Image (cartoon, rainbow, N blue to C red; front, side, top):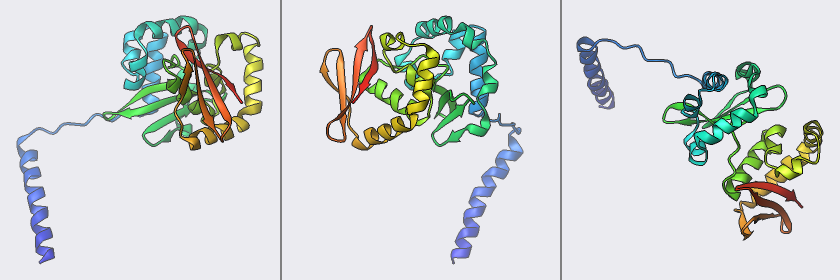
Length: 229
């Protein structure tokens, strides 16, 4: 009986398909562009200063915190860096895919993409202005940068006044020396599962391991990680 039911089920599925094939012209499905293709398209738009087209390739989360004006400002501040052959620096061999994908360059920089409605979209990383509208945004950026060992993205989490005290090269070197320790801290913060608590209008904290804290401060409308102690 079960064999008969399976045969009937197959016939029910096959007959409509045969009818559809006989009456409707065949269409070739367009291949789904992978994360590397989307990143290449995005960087080409950046180089051509096609902000609106690059903006369309950002994730909905990023668009929710970032307008085209901010993206244009980012382009102006990073013109020299964006002139490099960006699409060849982030390799498919280094992509890790679940719901997200990370393309990583040899120097540690990374671009993070997410899968939305069947298509890849740029979410965050080296080629996107940082999202820091809330303390929660800043914690997410900090943890993602640390876990990705992306020192350039991690430095963007620090307040401008802190970055101004040292050269960019010195800061990158210091980050790379401390990245293993920072990854342990990130694991502990994740395990704590806490959310940032605002202790004043311009200060927020996350407590982990009982007495340890991650401190965030608001500066010029954005939130940054000020200290870990």
